[in-house]
Length: 265
Image (cartoon, rainbow, N blue to C red):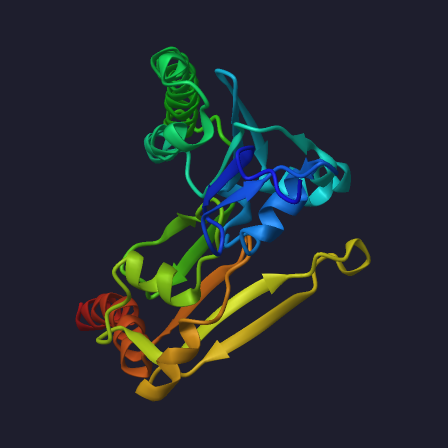
């Protein structure tokens, strides 16, 4: 006997190539199955999971955990397993994958309906749990109970404000400026945009690094789309020279009029 093609494991989702992998006499591991499918094709590891459906039960391994714990690659798979790599928590796509593979990996059609019912129940439980987690997370976020990192806007911006950094990916200087409406060129000086960043070294408390962007040259704006923001950065936009002069005059003019009035008396 050279092959065991009747005993297979289905692999799909965020892999290079969905495939059916034969279970050999030397056993088949999760790592081997994923390698046979071309390996993981995942961008955002933080949100990706490896789901294994077996005999009515759905097992889930976050990709971050899978990569951090090498022993998980040696997890043995058995005939009839279905492995699906998902980059979101949307279980509907995983369910459709498992359902289409049941005809291939199930030996008896009489058992197919029982397997489908079991799978639907398991998917429903998982979906309910994930939906509840998402609602709780959204509630905590609205009530300011979820830890957030912020970037602060100051100077001649449309609104003195703080910008919450997004979860799971980086925000750039352009994201912050244009999400908050940018700034008014009549008062703000596009040649004098600064990002002020404090030192993370405890031995250098109070030390500040200032990054300067001259957006007066339109070609330099592309730099803002690649400059990554960090927690507690301060974006400061200097005022136009004419704005400084006008504001100084506004402050000084009432005092001048008052002095002139007293002199006239």
